[in-house]
Image (cartoon, rainbow, N blue to C red; front, side, top):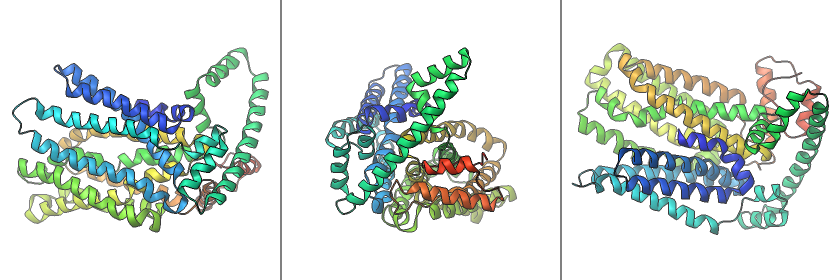
Length: 459
């Protein structure tokens, strides 16, 4: 929960202080929390350390995703961003086996060692960040364009000139749009009451609130809402319910408690790691983000429906049914890791306009972690009432999300960040035709010229 709260402000903080400084601050805060956990002698110290570590993680997790998207050439942006998820899965596997062996230590080191290793990892991140360049998109936003062109040429020597032209075009569109927006705001302030004028002044004076308001402003709301919904629904797929409570699920399927614990945590972690590798080297940058989101969602929906049906019919009590449930759980984890774990986050980040990318992505991450908390707290209660119910519920959400991606998810494969505006426009227009919504009106046509369009018609 602490991570969700700090993630809410990480976008505006990284816009002001830069991506790399926000990552460094988050890593330092997380390290303090980890070492407090490692040195705790009272329960309150352990809880406080957990909250501090979570707060630091909330600052750097989303910011790393934004940074990787903004520095990567279009041809390898997917695989570069996917590296983050690959390393996360490596950490999960290391963490499991570390805890599996350290729990047998006959002293308090059994629980302190994992926290010490976490703290060292955070310190390594904080020490290394100053040696990496700033995000070129952030440099452009600060008016440091020559530095931005230099960074782009470092990562994409062949395509640097084309990226430069597209960024300059985007800058002109942004400046024109925000100039017209300021003029409309001044006009509205002149016509507003004293109380309303005070409220508007407060909003503009608070950087975090102003950034969020901008993300939901005209011309940007559609992509922000889509990203927030996609990342929230990612947790309603049931992935963390499966990973958190896999020992319970495997015991429920009829395995012994120790065997269930090993298969659930150890083998699941290995499956999770191995499944990210195809996404890293092929799926995201060859197959595309949109097919990953749609196909992955439908396959996971089938897995959840089969598991729910096995429990509802009583077949899960039989030997064949028991192993079918376990196989479906592993298949679900593998499909999620190959598709949604990487494509959803990358798509959510890269489809946002440059002005609101960090803030909109941080809102999406907050949505993800908030829903994660709800799922984590309610899954055991749901399972105790109905062994099959949670699986059917997760399957339903997966189907809804897949349909949402069919309608609105753009394909960003191989596109520069500045070209994705037009891709989004085309996808929304197709969705409107499918839903038999009236063509866009004049106001939407004007907004399109400034780089975005909303999901719903305001004509």
